[in-house]
Length: 322
Ligand code: UT7
Image 1 (spheres, rainbow, N blue to C red):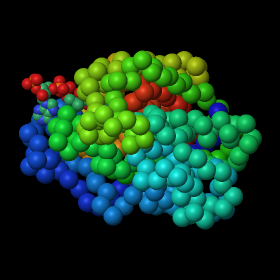
Image 2: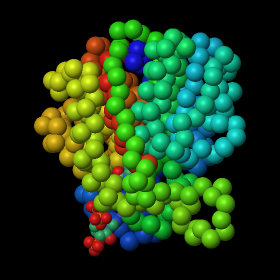
Image 3: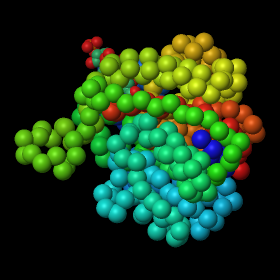
Image 4: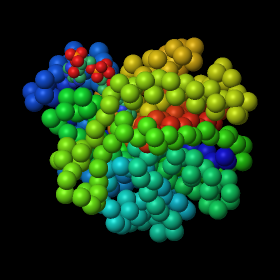
């Protein structure tokens, strides 16, 4: 895959809800949530929408990359929580940014693996010489899909968007690894309002999760897929500067680091502040690291996502930055 990230951006709502706020309406506590997940607060959209957050993150990524909207050939938005079905979120972003020459579509349903899949899709287009410049976004308003009566899920999620500008670059040639296992899909579900039956209980329209099953899946599959992607690209862990993992639970990230026998310092985290923002978590983290000057030129990064489907995957990218 010959596409390289040359700018990042993010947007999170200013309104936050901390663990004590959640403990006012479900039977939980700040201590339990911090210990079991590492989350302290999450940002929740009030006037923002998935489209508006995606547009703002995209705009900031373009500024960071020093690229004009007219130069964008492709806009991909990974989301499971858009406020629009038609037109797609990516077309709405195109309109907001004035990216008049871009081809636009959404990568829906890939949930927390969504950004990795969108990155891979854009990289494949860039590698194939079909497009030269892409804007890849993960944007979520998970608060609209959260059952605020279910303490097993409502403590986890947050809203926000992250974006990356990618350019064709022959030197960044790494192959990704991705997997799907539909037979395990029941572990993490959410019915659409289009499901065509009147017999659906109201809670099925919100995210429902077998937390332990997803936890076990993640701590097994994420180290596996990271080893696979390293092997496929003839790399060893020492070649990797940072592992940018989907931010679902601090214990999952800790367990992945341990299973890979890699120092936890190579696994940056920001889930304490944002919770799990699904497809947005990887690009939000990437943008924070970029703006804090923590990414070094030539450093190899592994991006790894996992979630509903079940789906999981990893990609290697060399940091060139803005
Ligand atoms: O983005 C990808 C998708 N999602 C994930 O990656 C999430 C993966 N799963 C997890 O992060 C964890 O499984 C959770 C954080 C969701 C749950 O943590 P856990 O350590 O697996 O807890 P558990 O489900 O095994 O529950 C342990 C106990 C239970 O009580 P009993 O049966 O032992 O009396 C639960 O009822 O904790 C109880 N519990 C809670 N207690 C206080 C469950 N949720 C809460 C809560 N506050 N919010």
